[in-house]
Length: 249
Image 1 (spheres, rainbow, N blue to C red):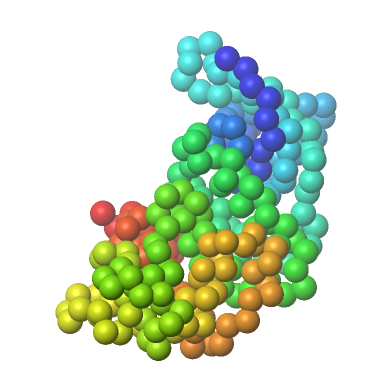
Image 2: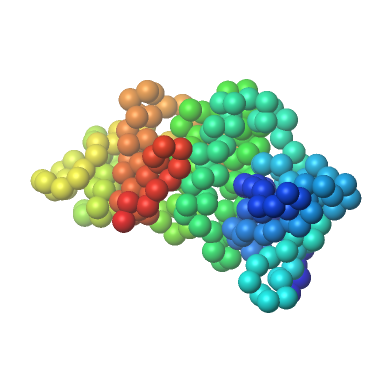
C-alpha cells in the first residue's frame, strides 16, 4: 500500500550509517514511524526535509513483508527559523511533541491532532513571547480533542453555571467541576478561580495562535497548571519526568 500526505517531523534517529527512522504526524495516518533508507546521503529524495518540526509532503509505502513503512521521498513545505534558533522555544516545542508521542494519535483523531500541533508550532515560531503555560495548554487541548474533555461550564452535581459561582473546585478522580456548595469532603479536589476556568475554557475553544492573548494572573496560572497536570496524570496515566512523559500505571 502506498500513500501521499502532509506530515510534521516529530523525531528523527539514525539506525545505520546512511539510513534514518522518522516519526511523523500526518492528518490521514496519525502518528507513524517510517524508515528513510539512504536519507543521510540522498541529495534528491530528502534534501533539507527531515529536520525536526518541518512540515513536509511525503510519499510512503508499506514494506513487502508488511512489517514497516518505507519513506520513499519528501518535499519541504515549511521549516521554522525562529523556533530552531531559540532554545527556550525548542524546549516548549519538544515538551509538546513528547506529549503527542506518549498519548498516541489514532487515525480517527489524526486530523485534529495534526492541525493543533501545526498551529502550536506556528505559535512558537511567530509569537514575540510565547506563553509560559503553552505546554500545559497544549496537553489540555489535545486531551480534550481526543475525547478526554472535562466540563468546565456547569457544576456536575447541581447543574449551576460555574461562571455564576463564587468559587469552584475540580474533582480530580471524577474529572468534573463543582461549585463550592456541592464540593464533597475528602478526595482529591483542587481550587480553581473564575479566571482559571475562563482561560481553560478558551484553550478548549480557540486555536493556539490566540493563546498569547489570554490574560491570566500568576495565581490563576498556577491553578490552571495544577489542574491540567493532575487531570493528565490521573486520567491519561502520564506525567513529565526527566525530560519525557512516563506511564504511571
